[in-house]
Image (cartoon, rainbow, N blue to C red):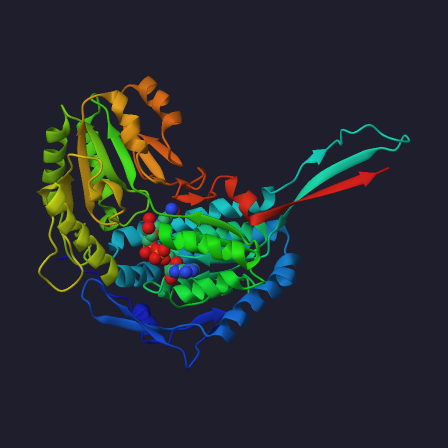
Length: 495
Ligand code: NAD
């Protein structure tokens, strides 16, 4: 057992009354519903958070608008970049507190909270900070002939869209929020965040750190509550853009609400049923390591994780038996124990959903290993390998978002592309082979926003990330985000 000690600052933070963060201050409506936050590893209550009232929602958007037109607009791009960097420094300096809070609320292993929610999220902010000084338009020469000898010149400007509504899921609350904060602040926008109702505490703490870093009040606001608060936020007339990350059904609703509200621009980062394809020559040991790392990490609650794996029939038994051996070594238990690899599923609705899919797999497919919930307190399930015999089985089609990977054999490489693309989702895919020319020929045919070769789920801020088909609209990262957070204004001059 190497259970870590909970910091006194975390214990004290849990004792506080939690509500919203508006105009640089914590606020808490007294007459709104309270949401109980439950530790998924113990099923014990952790804290409560008050849902935002309509008045608080209006106040949050008004404060974001004031900052957008006022103090934030006065900052030079260099100053914005410096402030984002200072914010990243404070996230690291308070990293253990943030990591523990996130692990308590989400059941994510403490290693993963430290690595992704703290370190990588600070690194992503620094990536965006670098962009603040590099956002520019073009100079253009108009092409029509002059009528009376006059001349024309033109330019485009990239102007921040305004107040952004950032709606966040529970699986990587801090990291995904920081992708949206970094993009908004680098381009000169302000943001109102709506965390998941399951994991609101870290974002409230993050907003305090932003003030400590010197980011003006109103630039980052946080509103808590269930989906209805998110919907009201999207419908607010002063929200200029929605950046949503979550499931496909909610994302579709969000897109429709945004369009109906005010033709509000909207980017959607949604779910997936991501395929990994192992060609006959694949390095199986490397693939086993890759699947252990990326398919089961955070109990499979990763949007880009491989959930459908197509393996050449000659290699499937070798792959699944080595993977099952790897999984049998992994310790399941408290996510605050540093020797544990598998913690609980993050919340009760998701636990019920995963259990439903495990029952479905028992009826339709063959369970190679795992397949059960653990008989103990907490939302624990065994990491599971399922062998499918048809691509029409439920676990080959629906996103489980759990520690369950379905493997299906194929015989002929010519069927592979059809199998990979036979899905309404298109978030990510991977090809495992030592034959680079085969991989290069497959890449343009694969319907996914990201294709990895001999790796899976490596998300880096310099590489655009987002989905095709029903997995989303728009991209985070790279330079692609600039288009989504800025308006393109054309200016023409006659001389
Ligand atoms: P979800 O869609 O249930 O909720 C996401 C957020 O939307 C929450 O904050 C929720 O309160 C809010 N919400 C719910 N109804 C709303 C409405 N009508 N209007 C506005 N907001 C509303 O998703 P989840 O269960 O929190 O997260 C898991 C899902 O997120 C999975 O499908 C996963 O694949 C996806 N995801 C995608 C990415 C990506 O980058 N593509 C990253 C992480 C998670």
